[in-house]
Amino acid sequence: PTFNLLKPESIRASLSVDHLKQDMLSLSRLLFLRPPKIVSFHLGHSAREMRKVPPDSHDKAVGEVPTRREVFETFCESLRIIQEFSPIGSFPLALENLDYHKGGAYEYICEPDFINDIFREFPNFYLLLDISV
Image 1 (cartoon, rainbow, N blue to C red):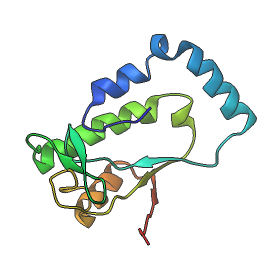
Image 2: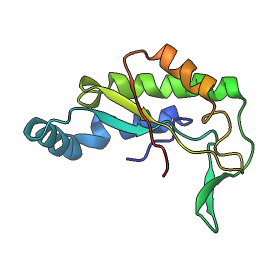
Image 3: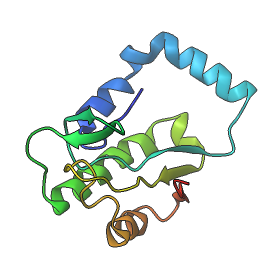
C-alpha cells in the first residue's frame, strides 16, 4: 500500500492482520523466497491530502499544512508502526528523500535539518538518496 506518514491510523489499519490475511501469506512467501537486502519508501509529504498539479504532476497540499513539529511527531509515530510490523520491520529500512516543489506538500520534509531529526530518532534507518537527475 501507499503510506501517508501523516495518517498513522491508516497505516495501522493497512497492516492489520485482518486486512492482510491473504496478502500477508503472499507477502511472507515472497519475502521468504526473495528476501530483500533493504526495504525503502519515501519520507513522505507534509500534507494529509494532496492532488497532482500540471505541468509536472507534483503534489500540492489540499487544505492546511500541519506545523513542522506535528509533521515530525506524526512521521515518527507512523515509522514506529512500520518498524514494528513484521515481516517488513525485520529487514533494514531506508527512507528516500523527495525534491522540493511549491504548493505545501513538500514543506519541512526536504530540509536537511528535518531529515537529520528523523534519522536521529531512527538511527538504524538508512537514507536512500534520490538525486533527481
